[in-house]
Image (cartoon, rainbow, N blue to C red; front, top):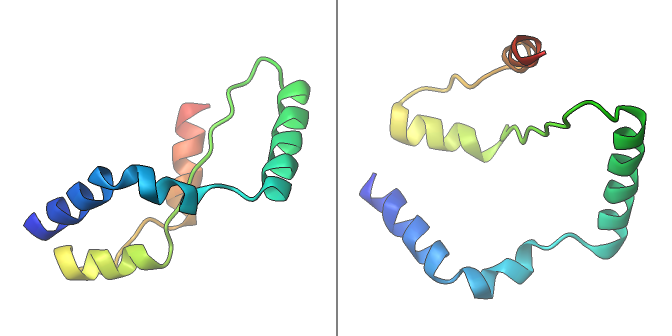
Length: 85
């Protein structure tokens, strides 16, 4: 895990230079903001929760560091959402 710590340390120390590479394009940002505003207006008393499920590169990480290929499937996320409702 020292390699992971080294990588994250390098990323964090260079975050100002890297941040512009991870910005949403204006047209996508506008579409997403409108969609979220519509949802928020429809469900005023609700909390919006977003989940970023890493389904590609995370498998490589699991195999490399934990010698497993098992990641959470769709039913895991559905059960988690039910739990918090």
